[in-house]
Amino acid sequence: MIYDASLDDLLQKVWTGARINAAEALRIYKLPLEELGSLADRRRQIAKATVYNGRGNEMVTYNIDRNVNYTNVCNVYCKFCAFYRTEKDDDSYVITFDEMDKKIEETIALGGTQMLMQGGHHPKLTKQWYLDLLSHVKNKFPTFNIHGFSPSEFIHFREVFKEPLEKIIGDFKTAGLGSIPGGGGEILVDRVRQRIAPLKAMSNDWLEVMDVAHQLGLYSSATMMFGHVETIEDRIEHLERLRAQQDKSLKRKTENGNAEMGHFTAFIGWTFQAEHTKLKAPTVGAHEYLRTQALARIYLDNFQNIQSSWVTQGLEIGQVALKYGANDLGSIMIEENVVSQAGTTFRMTVPDMHRFIKELGYEPHQRDNWYRLVN
Image (cartoon, rainbow, N blue to C red; front, side, top):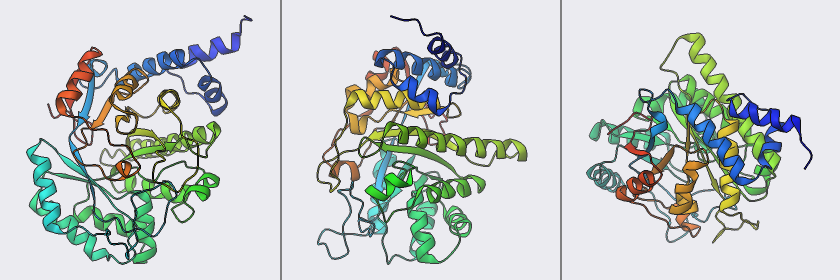
């Protein structure tokens, strides 16, 4: 084997925590899986070294929340989605406030601190309906966080309500919205988005929502749904755009001296789940998932948290992912409706979480949406 000094330099660069570029990322991606995992684990250690009173490397976190889909009516017809319905379908619905209350009460009884609330792009729900829903939840459950509405939903709202994003997001925040999930990110490359969801928000729209939300003091998560029609280079471009937005938000916080301004709290990646969808694309397995998550940990040097996607990969791979850059197992997922419609129905309990975390030598701790420890 011929010694490659440039690769040795790149590996040292990654090991010490330095930033890499897209060309270097593509080279790193091609390493043997175990070697890439080792580098990602090292970057996890660097990212978590100073948090939780310097004990971040000893902990793996999780949260208890519930996915609540307030409607399944949607007019963007994404090819990769098996959840959406039209208004004419017999099983279409819009949630009632009483149904919402029951779901939240069940979540709180199980130790939950928030709900992830998203829905289809319903063409007829008014802005006042959303504001009334947010106000109702916040008034009845004041300490319960509403982690709600993906960027693509806000772009839909902008078109339907005929108002600027700053006004809509600001009003939603006033009514009770606490943070924004990164759903709808898919791949932030318009060529790819045009193929899998041509009626959905494009890349700049998605990023604009996040930028406005961060300026208004809302934190958000970032996601990537991969393993369909995109290339490896597309995945790296997606990571680059996330990293650039995080740089922008963090710089703004520093320059303004405003700790209340938001940014991305975590990155969550998962693979395309094909069953019952219209998107004809080859799916990828656990090795590709682990490889991509490891690359994300290395590339996203300004993200403190990477979440394992056991919901799509299964419990065992979700556990293995903790050695490939992840420091968080996400939620026990009291309720999940979208991925399960595509044929994936993994479930986990709090004892499962604790066992999986302890088996790897870490301490399990519940956290909230802002990665503050609950216990």
